[in-house]
Length: 225
Length: 231
Image (cartoon, rainbow over all chains, first blue to last red; front, side, top):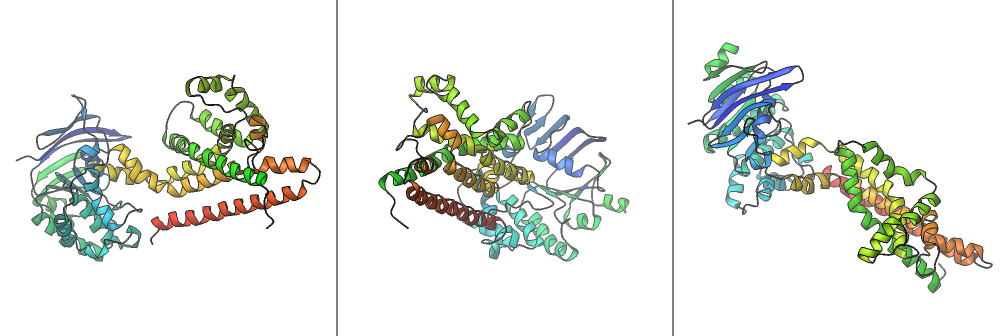
């Protein structure tokens, strides 16, 4: 079953992005070199960047359709987004950061869900701390937890390991794999590193110079070298 | 410290009330204008910026005179406010508060604007993806992150309002118990024989109040920034 269907065009200065792909469940890697347009593409899915033309569908709802002038604002899309640099709120504790999505959508508190995700990511001992006091790896785990706790329909991860050194990358990857296996949330995982994608992704969309070059299984990584 | 006379206490109490009311009324406007100047893209932004800063460079007497023309009982704005809301500014303490607010406004807006400009907009994007509508983003992310700037602006505006003299005396005169603030009272005492002692006592009060405002600014500023930069 198709979960997300994207067909968009966008002119960004001299760079032309024109991409079309569908994803089913599991983890889909948006894979390609830097400057391929991966981040622009996930920003469009999240609603942070407006395509010039095309449409974006999630399940049976239209998030964006240029022809019908539909553009659902980001706060109504319920799409979780883990940014490259975490983007934790510096004026809130880790616990408040994790709880932010629930507060904003005025859902009732669910301590068991909170506890489950905090322990899945190994951050239960950090709840009182400020983001400044966290290591890069901890910060990224909190960012993942914050996105998961908003109960997203889709989770976008934009190079979530890029800001970490090799040791900390190894620290996060197992959590991501557990998340894939335990949470039934479809994910789009942006990366330019084949080894990373091989560990986490189930399908691959290969992007280059703003175009989708290929879509399929992990075998596409081998071709890219 | 020698005892203040009842008349001197009245001036102190009046000054504090005028400065507090002026700052409280200026604050929401200060945040709105600061936000417009930091984020807005519109025709006439430079003009607005200039208007906001005008009281800083105009002779205070000129500002007071303009207030008198506009907000006096027969002035265009003053007549409107009197007819519709029964508000009177001329020769009332409310007028002194208005003059103080206008004079303190540039000092209020500037730190707020700078704080808003320094905010990482990507945090606001993150809040939006987490389900916060634009108003919630503003109140839960933008405003708290701008808090150190807001605190600085409020205290500068308050201190300026406390010491305002030229615009106030031009606009609402120097009426004991109504518009005679500490500054105006000191000025009056210096005009009469044997007024030196009373003037001296009020000078001490002015110094104490200004120092207290400075120390409060420092303390609050540190507390606000400590909240972001770790415990």
